[in-house]
Length: 321
Image (cartoon, rainbow, N blue to C red; front, top):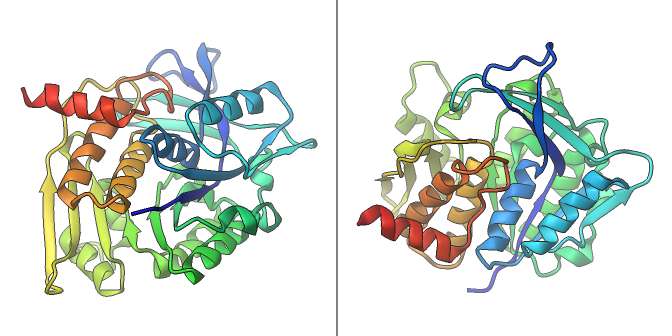
């Protein structure tokens, strides 16, 4: 099956605190810059697997922007949708770790080049042969960005294309009112939904609702495939069988020593969606997605752990020995 994926949103550089529990309000050392941004990591992972993907974003006319473009192009991402701004710098993020998965961020997105991404940056001609749009919740950071996302969504849906949505909730973004309001709209059009385990309660209708109840309610609203990402514990799949009966499936994850968890969920989503669109079974797609997430956390830097299909295959084979 031929397909082409599109994704839109933040493209930035990231700096990592050298020490755990390093505070932002005290002088400390950071390493970087690393190319980053959830949709950028997603696009990079799709391209590394050998599938066509176009990414829409904005960068500044600066070395950070050049670094990001060079990396994406090198890994095979179609960069024709990335615009260079003269009046804003490339976005940035600083991250410090409090535990293996607990992180604090300081983002410079709304006032950066990617924060200026708008409706007019989405070139319809570049979307002509796109069959799937992946939406990251973290990319819905302004009315401008939401308008850009809606434009791409309308174009792809009008041609019979499909939509995937990863909420990618960040506590640092909860005060952006536009983001919360846009979630309901995106969910109406979502075919593949990819929340992490900690995000399930956000979509529950009551505090005592179980994961199964929340996911079945979303399936009944029209979402076709749901995957709950659980890190090293694997993933839960919710969907329907050929007779339209509710279906659940769990695929175990891979135990690895985490070095840097940033980007793991993006790599997982990119791998699962690409392989599903390519015709792999849900179980196969989840196994490779789990491997993709496991390899992603083994490298320092958010985009440094993206993997080729051969690397994933080799990792799974070694693990199963």
